[in-house]
Image 1 (cartoon, rainbow, N blue to C red):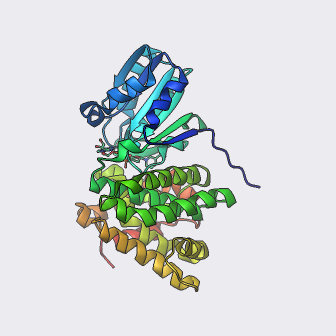
Image 2 (cartoon, rainbow, N blue to C red):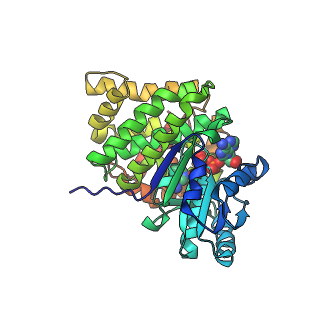
Length: 360
Ligand SMILES: NC(=O)c1ccc[n+]([C@@H]2O[C@H](COP(=O)([O-])OP(=O)(O)OC[C@H]3O[C@@H](n4cnc5c(N)ncnc54)[C@H](O)[C@@H]3O)[C@@H](O)[C@H]2O)c1
Ligand SMILES: [Fe+2]
């Protein structure tokens, strides 16, 4: 049996934020980060919503904490909005979604992604950090009512952010394609998201703005896939290392993804090979397609100037091995670990750590 649902209305294209007015809200609570206050986009969103009253909570930082979300929840409750809008990357969207969820009010929730990565605009997830541990909250109540994919917001994306968040999309698509909960419909979205992002990322990185909406849509499709199929070991370990070392999520995924493919290959090899062929990497034999997939991702990682190892991302390998027990424990406790296509034993996580710290 297979179940697939998507309650989120998705509006995409140039000037899509104008559709906020269709919600006919009176009291808007906007959650964002300081960058969008400074560059005027937060104001534009408030104007587009045409509400009588608006309050802006603009204190979100990358990897938002439980304490910050609690503070924002109190402000949101006191304001009594009928529309909550989360504007920004995965961090701002997660923080806004979590605040709206904790406040338990009656309002519509709209998410406006400004990075093409997390897919949080359509997912049941929100990741909050507490005591250097990233906690993914999972609940259908976290899914936004509306996702606005406005290509105007992607024009000034910095190269580094395109690269990092692009690898987040690839890892969402790839992990959900082989996850325990995958099915025909999630496969459809995951396959299209992977092929489309893999093909368009080099051009987007090189400055071709006309392909950015393509990657943005791929991010949303990958979100639709993984929110139902689940993720896997790459995300479990990325959350564990990200909480400890505060390296951007997509950058960690880029380092981990090829190593995770090798680990899962003997149970998920066939599907990895399918994905490689769908993305045009060739390989009539599964083993060749699998090798092409791993090499293709390593090549793309180099082309996008992303680090190849944790050391290149500024994480001292000696610190990783000193903290190895805690890193393995946090990865095992992460909900994404349960979705991995094969049982995750501690030695598998240590094997991945060996590859990404350059021990092998
Ligand atoms: N909820 C989910 O389903 C889900 C899925 C994957 C990842 N996540 C979470 O999302 C977070 C990562 O999100 P992210 O990769 O989008 O980055 P982010 O939201 O952490 O933002 C990173 C930086 O980029 C800046 N930024 C964002 N958009 C920009 C733009 N258009 N131009 C210039 N700067 C911009 C932000 O101000 C911030 O300083 C992680 O905490 C991760 O755990 C959530
Ligand atoms: Fe992710």
